[in-house]
Length: 112
Image (cartoon, rainbow, N blue to C red; front, side):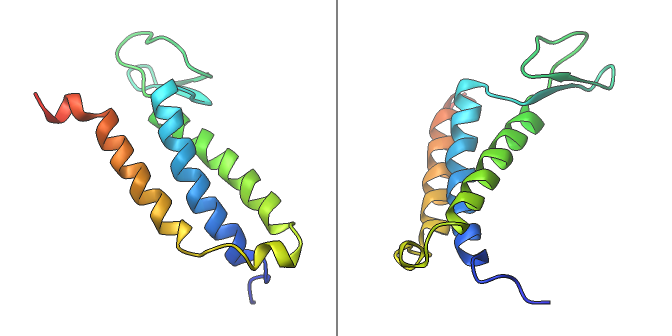
């Protein structure tokens, strides 16, 4: 089975958008759900800790994944002449910049 011709475009857009949206989700705490490990329950959207700490990381990843999937799907449906102009380097340049931005956001934890 071979992937469709539009898969490279989907993958490039997905990688770039996922990285950007993940950094935004962490900064603004935009989680689709919250996991409470002490009681083993999930909550919808961002919830305050119930008994023990609340984990938002899974929700941030889900938020970035959903948005990146939709953006990749839209990009895959674009006309061919638009797709040809997409530089494949965005799939690594944007995530590297997002890692630098994440490091900046978490600098307080590294500089203690």
